[in-house]
Amino acid sequence: MRRKHLLSRIAIALVLSWAFYCAADYFAVSRWDNTDSLIVRVIETGPEIEVSSDEEEDSYETFERDTVMQILSGTRTDEVLRVKTVRLSGSGLEVRPGRRYLLVWDMFSDGRVQYSLADAWRVSGVAGVVMLVCTVLIALTGTRGLFALLGLGASIAVLVFSMIPLTVMGWDCVWLAIASVFIISTVTILCVVRHARYRITALLGSLGGVFSGFLCGAAMVYLWGLNGLAGEGAALLASTLPGLNMRGLLLASVLIGSIGAVLDVSISITASMSEFVDYDNDIPLDRLLLAGLNVGSEVLGSMINTLILAYMGSALPMAVLICSSGVEFSGLLNDPYIAQEIVQSLAGTLGLLFTIPASAFSFVLQESLRRRDG
Image 1 (cartoon, helix red, strand yellow):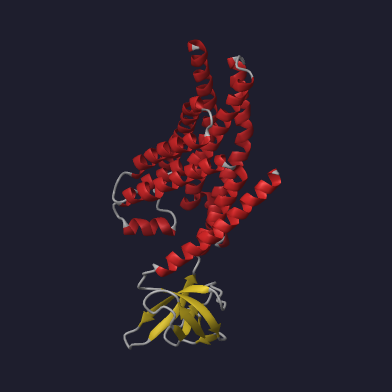
Image 2 (cartoon, rainbow, N blue to C red; image 1 turned 30 degrees about the vertical axis):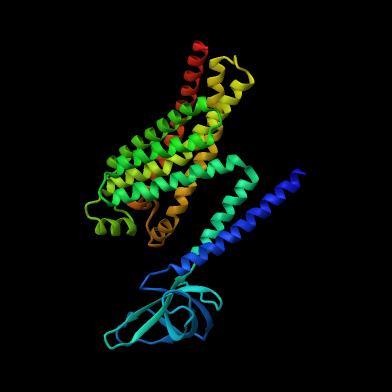
C-alpha cells in the first residue's frame, strides 16, 4: 500500500512538472519583449562556410551558414526567415534543427544586416526541471520537504528581491548581508526544526558560527590586502557601479556563502541533542554536551569537504587558466582571485568549527534553565 501511494505521488509530481513546464514556456515566449533578440525555432540549416576577412590580419575566424527558422516571439510570430547566420570560431553553440535559440542581429551603416544565433533558449527547461525536483522532493519527504522548500524559497527571495536591489541602490552591502543572514536563519529554522523550544538554540548556534567565520574572513581580507576586484565580473561591476564598495561586497559574499553549511551543522546538532533529551529526559548535562560536540565533529568532516570542494569547483576554470600560463604554485596562491576563494573557503570552515560549540553550549544552557524552572 505504501509503495502504491509513493508511486502515485511521483506520478502526480511528473504530471505537475510537465504542466508547469508548458505553462512557463507559454508565458515566457509570449511575453518576451526584448527588442534586441527574438526566440526562433531552427527548421533547417546548411553547411558552414568559413568567411575570409582581409580587413584585419589577426581577426577571428568567422563561419556562416544558410538557416531557415520560424519566429516564435514578438510581432512577427510564425514568420519564417531564410537568412545567413554568422558565428565566431570557438563560440561553442551547437545548432540543431527543431531546437529553439535567441536570434540577434547587427545593422551596419551600409544597410547590411548580420544575423547570429546568440544562445539556446532554456528558460522553460530550467523552470520545468526546478519544478520536477521540488515536486519529487515533496512526494518523497512529505510536509518536511515542503517546509524545507519554503525556507529555501524565502532565502532566495530575501537575496533576489531585497539584498541585491538595495545593494545596487547604494546601501551598505555588509549590513544588508548581516540582516539577510539573520532573516534566512530565522525562516529556515522555523521551517525545519520540529521542536519549537529548541529553535532559539539552533538560531544562536548558527549566528555564532557564521559571524565568527565572518570575523576571521574580514581579518584575512585586510591582512592579505584584498580589494574584491579580482575577476572580470568584479571589475565590470566596479566600472558599472563606481560607488559600490567592492571590499564590502567580498565580505558580504563570505557571510552569504557560509550560512547554508553553518545552518546545516547547527540544525543537525540541535536535532540530535533534542532526540537525546526525548529519549532520556534526565540525561546528565555534561553527557549531553559531550554528545552534541561528538555529533558536531562527525558532521564537520563531511561539511568541510563539501564547502571546500564547492569553492574549488567554482575557481577551477581560473586556476587552470593561471596554471596554463606557466605560473608556479606560489604564484597561484598569490593570485587575488584564488586568494578570495581561499578566504571564503577558510572563513566558511572556521564558521563551521565555531558553530559546533556555540550550538552545543546554547542547547545545554537552555536545557539547564528548563530543568531549573521545571
